Each structure stands twice: as C-alpha cells, then as structure tokens.
Length: 249
Picture (spheres, rainbow, N blue to C red):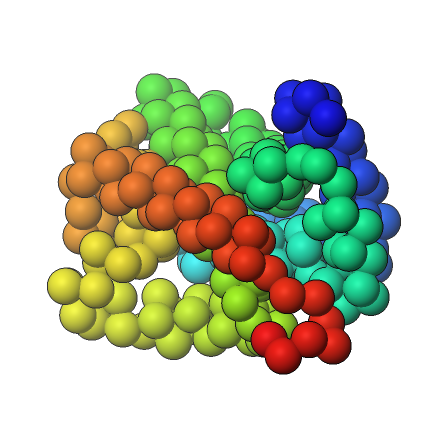
C-alpha cells in the first residue's frame, strides 16, 4: 500500500474510533467549563489579565484540561485495538510500522489540539481580546501552548500504550504527581515536564504566570521536539516487535 494513502486511511479510522467514544463527549463538556468561567469574568467586568490567566489558563487549561484530553486520546489511539485484538488486522497489512504510528499520532494529537485550542481560543476571545494587546498576546500564547502540549502528551502516551495496558493510569499519575507537584518544587525536573514545555512556549508571547516558567521558550520548544521525535521512534520500534495478545509478551 502507498504509505501516504495508508496514513490517511488509518487516521480516518482512528478519528472515528476516538470521536465515537463516550469519554469524548465528557471531555467536550469539560472543555466548556473554562469557557463559562471566562463568560462569568466578562459579565462581572473583571479586567485583570494576570488573574484570569492564573485561574483559567494556568489552573484549568495547562494543569487539567490539556493533559487529561491529550493523555486520553493518546492512550486510546491503539488502546481499543489492542484490547479487542483487532490490531492483528492492522499489523497484517503491508504497511510500514512508522506510517501506522504517524497516522495514529496525527489523529490523537489532532483531536486533542482541536478540542483544547478551540476551548482556549474561545475563552480568550470572550475575556482577553477586549483587554487589548496584552490580552491578545496571552490568548495567542496559550493557544500555542495548547497545541505544543497536546502533541507532546499524545505522542508520549501513545508510545507508552504499546508497552503497557496501564498507560492511562500512568498518564494520570504523571499529570498529578510529577507535573502537579514535583515539577513545581524541583527545578531540575522541568526538563522532563510537558507542562513546563507548554508554559515556556507561552512565555514567548507574554509572561503572566504567578510562578515563572522554568524553561526559556527556545529551550522548551527544543525539548518538546526532541520528546515527540523520540516517542515516535520508540513507538515505531515497539510496533515492529509487537506481539499479539495471547503471546508471551
């Protein structure tokens, strides 16, 4: 099969699988919460950009919505096929394993980006854009942060899902313990924190965090690219050696 056509077809099937799950509806509902909060800020006449950014963008988007959405979609890209055994049909096709991984990663990251960026963008339009240039910079900064973070989380946990069926549990633990606690307390961990990559990228537009990002924008972007490339390579390698359920793996 032509690799480009294979990527397109696999991505289409994966998108239908991801969007057809009940958890997707719940994530959409969750993404509406910060939009409603932005509307509440606007209705109250709140014009403090830094306060809104701290509560909504840092507290809800970067800390909760972004990792939860991207981890769920990333682990779900292969998860259902591994669980029900239908991955055997995919692996039986004469398709390069890298093409399969690329298709799955594009689908998972694409859905995560669409959901998080749409939600963050709408929140920014409601509350921040009317505040002038600083509000516009904050909106664009966090939209970019949502996109970068979505790709990083989705590809990392897509790769992990090929090694263990507990990838979702590990992802939630990473989000709560590693990123929620340790990365804020131990500066050295910032190099291994997707949350810090996202905050660092946002700082390229405007710095409004209560606690400054521990990585410069260039360092954050470089580490994010390295993470995605390594995750894709590892996932492709693992898929080439993947043993079907019921084997000794």
